[in-house]
Image (cartoon, rainbow, N blue to C red; front, top):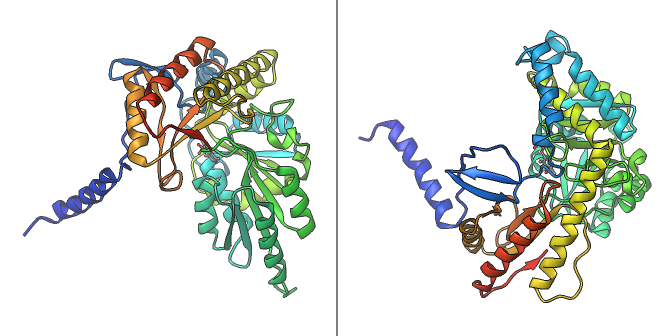
Length: 411
Ligand SMILES: *Cc1c(COP(=O)(O)O)cnc(C)c1O
């Protein structure tokens, strides 16, 4: 008889073979350089269009200096949950900076955006309640919605009519004043794999009309959109009408961690009830200090300049892609995420491989991150990219797609 461990391993190996056959196998590539516009993998240098470090802050000296200083003062580790061993001052400094930046009463720092979504949603709704999410929201929100035990309804992407139908349904089933049922709507402001924007203003109108709560995940908009770079809610003038503003500090802010911004009572409630906050060791103080420095940089003249550079590169790429596709007009710039939809998973992998051989690193995004048969190259631009970098990317795309009879289109 086979030893047990080998049969366990055989089963997993078979499952992995299944992924390989369907072009869905994933593996880690060891990077020996910082996460900059160029990265080095196994001795080869690539132009990098895969990072969410939209403003290039992850390698900015201001953030690294702040992290080093925090390590000097507080050491490397946090010791325990903030409720157990006390709450180090860098977390409070970060939360005060975040609340001022977003113009909210208060803010709460989580170890990741994922933890912020799971902790917050599960604290706010339970089995008596309804949660309504856009079909394309991030996995952290889907997981949170399932874990919460609330009745889950999914509306078609950015479809206000579909959303309203669900809000009406949720209202109609709410007939017992003894057990009032709450409805929480969750959407992203910039969708992570499509780069398009949610109609936040219209969603806010709807949630007010139906008495629902609204949570908006600004993971890809914070630092990038809005006059003060607070996000899409700021740009659409509805930030103060959203109950729960969520985001990550690991993308444009250049550090790591997640946040919730909103009323003081929301933050007090989450400190008591968000299990991913209560039952998890605080992030390292250096991460909080780096995030604070990132937020300060975003609000400075240097941040303004980086943001302007980013949007110039986005315009350049969109125009170049339109030219490749033989369209006269470029698509409107909505974010720093430009997906090129390929379709079949295996083809997307081939295209990504062909680009790597030309020195360009772009991930092929496949199921389950996106729907089956909607695999894509997800190009992300950053303020660190130069005009010449984008030209090099366009030339590589041109030659790779010439070899691919299917052609390509943007979402
Ligand atoms: C990245 C991301 C998250 C998770 O944030 P982390 O800090 O990386 O855990 C949540 N929502 C969206 C839309 C994201 O893109």
